[in-house]
Amino acid sequence: MRKLIVVEGLPCSGKSTTGKYIGEQLGMKCFDENSGVHPVDYEFQAFLSREELGSFLEEEQGLLMAHSLQKSGGYIIPLDQFEGELFEKLLNYKIYDFLPWEIEKPVMLDQWRSFAESVEPGEGYVFNSVLLQNPMCETMMRFGFDSRKSAEYIGEICRIIRPLDPFVVYLKNDDVRGAVEKEIPKRGTAWLQEVIEYHCWGGYGKEKGLKGFEGYIAALEERQAREIEILQNLEIEYMILRNPGRSWKDTYQRIMTRLRGESLPSPVCPAG
Image (tube, rainbow, N blue to C red; front, top):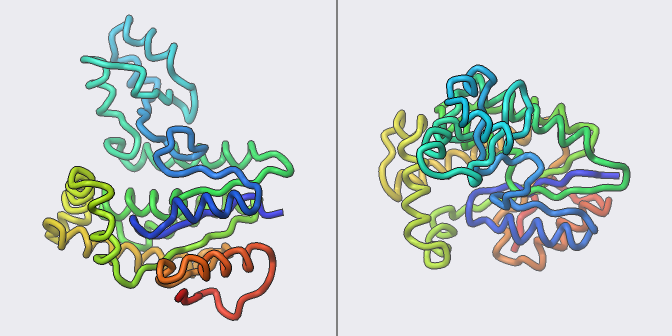
């Protein structure tokens, strides 16, 4: 039995809706990104090593330990449990944003291992974005690593989850700009400014001199190209659907046909 399906693609590609649809059709647990309860996504949490915890005041250490989970050789701490000066201090250890790569990578791989080992017989999960998008945002956008290093990291995750017989559904959009522009009225200008800053001010954006909306789109287009190349070289089953929004009915039919075990002529399936 296939125990893990991951829906991937750029922002505004329809991942969330597609993931929910797959989960409903197959009776699998669906977890969206930024849900706060994702089994492998450390949203708004910090990581402190034992040594770093010791640098806090004694009374602060007590509070932190009371709310933390001992894991990965340190402490996973939910940031929403704190405020004021202590909250500001903890922000410097926020996972995804401030941890150095040599600390963050083993923390994330440990979380994937914990999940893979926890899956019970008969359980099935549908994830949004965490296999390609999250690692690419970290390795490429934040740290400016090349595609080889991104592929090595994602490959490590795939080896951990191999017992779950994972499958990736990739939603490829040939008109990245158009998809983002269509979503701006729904998501708002605050969202747009936040993603522009993330993609243009990180390691990749600075290296390429990216600026503004044009820089954001350029970063997304390159990320999509890298993700597809990496996906095609992973030891994992997948299907790539081009421009799925042209006909969601056709897209969903193709996805369910493949997931239910019926063969398709090619792993790259044009929709519409």
